[in-house]
Length: 427
Image: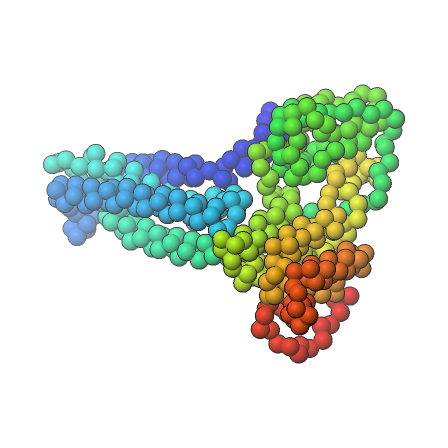
């Protein structure tokens, strides 16, 4: 039986693979060609749909050659997207770009029509012409051109940093909403007092864990499983991974490891902090001297604020505790606190953008809005960031008037209305 960890790896590979769906398209094209030949031999087509051997051969040859050219064109665009994304955005974004369904559908359509045309071309001779297949291939060409135009339009717009920020923020919000709220502040060991350590069997970042599976395993063995690292942490082979607390018959180490997915890099699946990491990377790259584009950083802060609103509306004061049906805690997972998320989202942008008035003004407005929207227990951390922003601006800006200007909250960075209606309290 395939373990949960192996299934997770397979799913991740299939989501990021650029060859599996096109291969299925190629196989589907060959199968459809055989179906078209079968139907063509059992029905009578109108005279207008009949072709001479030379015409059919020429049409199918041209279509096959065109599909090869279009495939090369799409691959070239893909290479340019990779270069652009790693140079001006964040290499971490590529994990999301690889998964785009339109890109895979485009490649699958082109490979499918290529194999469809080639399979029909092999059956053209002086005595038999696959008339139906030639007609279908002819109608498929304009469909592929439309698909290509949609592909170009999609990725031309998605290469903009603000569009990438919107995609990453949406992914982070989905994960943050799906995460269960944290439980009690402490976990009571479920029986016994012994402690055993399960160590990692390989190097890698913790990409995801099977919370239900671990909790069920702990209940079966009447123990408590305590993860020693949070999702997103990189662990080395042999380092502590899980503490097994309170059991006379401990579960097998391999079964525990099989419910914790390790990979070469982090993913967003269960890690909203990673989406914040990508957003911050894009913003600070825009603030680097080589690019010097604070407006992009301000636009990225818009989406950082939207993600922080979602995260800040949930209790994040304790680790994640998973209980069984009897109310006994069976699994404890370290999770980021609200202050951790806030520091991740603000610290580097504040440091790199200290001399940019529009960045500091946008940060000031972001913190003001967060203070009004987040849970009351999270407001102290927001107020601390407000103080840090003021201190940073004081050190970076010498002129008192410029200093005052740089600390005035502005949703647009610079240029927003000076007099806004009072914000209604969110709570």
